[in-house]
Length: 241
Image (cartoon, rainbow, N blue to C red; front, side, top):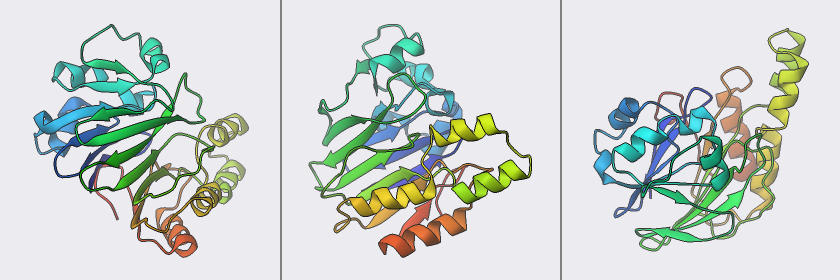
């Protein structure tokens, strides 16, 4: 499985995955020109774009992506909130209702975020028999997963950094509560990972880190120490470290 980070974080999210036959885009939260550049101008190779929810850092280019002849898959709640018109390029998907794009079998699941009908995705390649978990913008995942080979999971902030920023006056109490009720915290991410079957996982990607409330090096070390699995940080402007 090839995983490419095009953008990650509060200013925009976009990722490409491929099993060698079918390429998919996860999120389209940056301008189309930046997406095309990140894809080496091979947008025509993308057979579908999955969008988790309506917030602009995940859906900014949704209309332009469809105009570029890429099918978009997202929840009815997301479609209604964005006031999207019906289109043969727009597909309604529902939590726990499996669907297919090319060689991929995809199972959406509900996540916990301040959005209308947010989703995460479990993706299985019928070609390579690899299984990817994609979960972002959620403070909790209610499900457990088996047979995973790759994980892309939000690790937005840590409680320590958040509290230090509150004490320093860098954010207020209301903002703190909003973050805690909408994003995944480091210790909770580790707890979630350890509660799942990681026996076949060969890579963990930490995505959507907060610029203000995270510490990439520390997060990477903590997750690797807890899981023993190679861990990568998705960079804001693309790539991993």
